[in-house]
Image (spheres, rainbow, N blue to C red):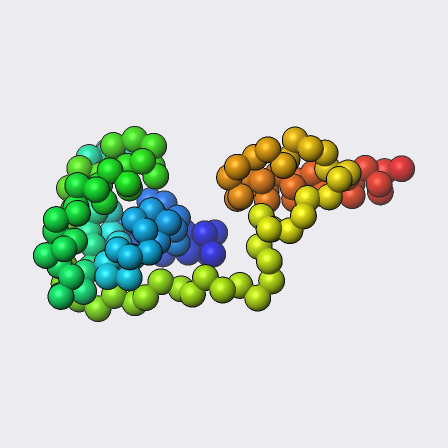
Length: 147
């Protein structure tokens, strides 16, 4: 999804598509049900002090208006720097976040094979752990081919 959607997301104002795909993680499930990011607009030539444009369910607009400082803080924590300075709200229809019910266990829940060592077990970020596990497996498979 990130590779395929990157061009489209950039066209509509998203420098990083993960803001959209990880929105429930960033603001929490409660807020993600009633608001969604539409675009991030930065001053010309800058990648900070931007304006985050949100679409909000009309009945929840006053509530979201009160938690805008918290949303700014969470989005900036996600980016790791002061990417967002303001939030612009637009009332409209918000599609509910995608159901989080995968039919197969995500890589982070599958047991890590013993041959990959104990070092991967200590990594807290499930995405990083999955990528490193995949890398270790492919390197192991390559080493087996070379033998």
